[in-house]
Image 1 (cartoon, rainbow, N blue to C red):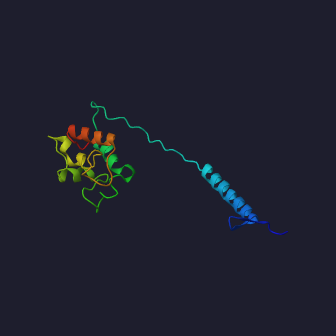
Image 2: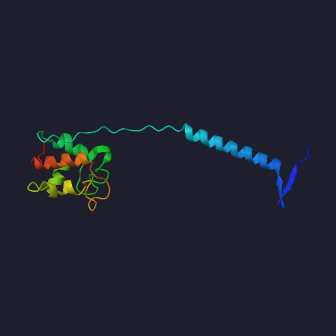
Image 3: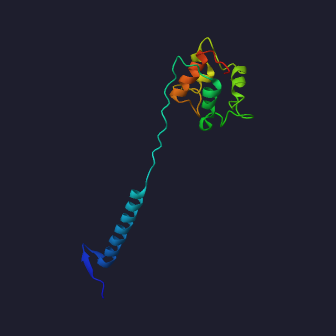
Length: 148
């Protein structure tokens, strides 16, 4: 069968080729739509941790040290042989106190609280505390920053 051709404004249009191009474009469109619509995203909901109760005693070993190690939060860099202070379990308290990172008389100015605080844009540039973690660290310092 001969290819049907038509002249329009001086341009030669091949209808058979246009029909194939439209079919191919439609095919690609439907494949892309199938791929996009088949994607499924699981939304991970992080558990909401309530802020600390001022009447509760904050334990360094049970509350503060895990903040440093939460999903390798601080200990990616601040580990034994790495960046000081060493915030790994068992070494964190001695490292924090020996470097003078706690100010009992003015807890808000304590470097272990202020530098990774989420509201401090000029301090730590990598990982920061969450708002709740910062509240726990501050309350622990206000309670005397005990190694408990």
